[in-house]
Image 1 (spheres, rainbow, N blue to C red):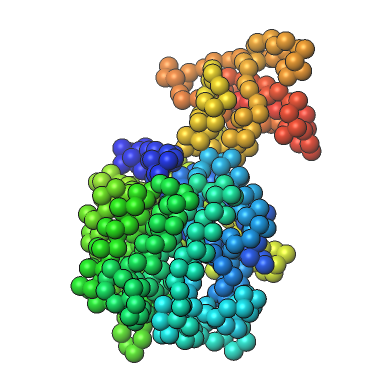
Image 2 (image 1 turned 60 degrees about the vertical axis):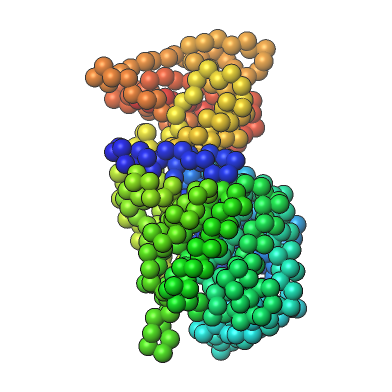
Length: 503
């Protein structure tokens, strides 16, 4: 592994936690939350990507209140059932060694009054001003209508309160932090942009007034999560009909980001200009094209800085190595490669073919995993799906810390599992009265060409383990038997498991 790649895979402190590498998974709208409730299919999706090495995961945009978005299966976080669904997801992500932030989302004027969820909400489509965004296509509404003229929200504090309650709910679900979706022409972006905000009160007009809405939301989130709050912005705009002249854009975002940075945020994600998401009206591109990272990096003095949009692992490594950013948020490649980090670490190609037809939802409500959880991991060698063996633990807390810190992770071995088992060399006899151990077979040490290799651990059922034990070329360093009184091991896979430490 090159020194550049090593930097990309080094730990990073954000807020109160330390993530195992600088590769984050972007918020990716996947439209699988039937009835707005996070479900088991979603839990599998996030668990796959946590096991695949993600240091930090931002959830897909999560609605702070019921809204009629273009995505009928977008998840929410405004009621107890949703909180319970998210808690399952948070737990499996943590069990697989990653951290997870909830991205809090209000779409504002780009909702539709005829969308089922908007009808259920019984509220108007709100925006900062009664100005419609151009474009839009609501494919789940008859006639495929576009955006409508919104109702100017009378008291923005009411929506700020919704964000704060969503943060309280996210904390109850166990999230490590929250990220304000301040990008892509959604409500905080609409308030900031002078083309969508024509208010004449304290929420509009000057840069300071237009920035007030987003900053007050961030302050409310900090009241709940302290230093574990983040912000995502895309100053170039374009998408959802936002964007200002260049100098106004520079002045606005330099003020906004500098003020946000004073709040003690964990990180700020700068989304670069992406031609794919630019739109054209009257023969002109809508976005304000400029170098986002170069323009705003210097005004962020405290928060960690992530770059997003079209970032390859190779570019991410170079940017981190140069000190330009602290980490990278990768999007589409996480959709198609659940083991993205492990592939990069082990030189595996990113060669899965995207299922474009099912990017947003499965074949039907009963097959939500199609194009979602069915992307394969790369073919694995013995070290590929592994965690480092941590020996002679003094406490369960050390086991927990070690499980979280490991960059590689065997999905069979979770943090929860490590807290429930302990490993004893197979040559050791243990007091049988405990019921935890029996007598063990053997321990075998080996070096390759005289060089001790860093041990890697995998758990196998007896038959699979025996194949490795009988193979003189399997490079086994040590063999452990796993105690089986714990119910986590009992079931259809059989009663006996072995932990093999490979060179």
